[in-house]
Length: 135
Image (cartoon, rainbow, N blue to C red; front, side):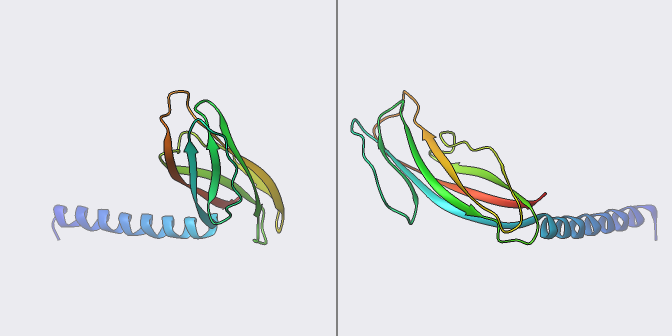
């Protein structure tokens, strides 16, 4: 083998070990994840909703907030930290700090969507992803 072939082989081996390490790490580090659709209606009215299939914040005016309470559970046999990631139209409206959960613990938490003052009327959607990582 010449030097070029050895270099390619070395890079290939490094990439394989890096991939195996990443897969192993994510398997043991990430314990579970949940994806929840979100929706809020911006209008001149204020309204409530009891919808449970999605995280529906109801109707609110620009500058106001929509608030929902949810229960999260750690079904794992190890402590985890729940991280909240958002996507979609309202990804910057919904912010939540990570929460620590002991094994088999559940907590009621509040999720809020703060509507910007300059938001136009209409329906806005997004996704909340909760990732449970071993601590």
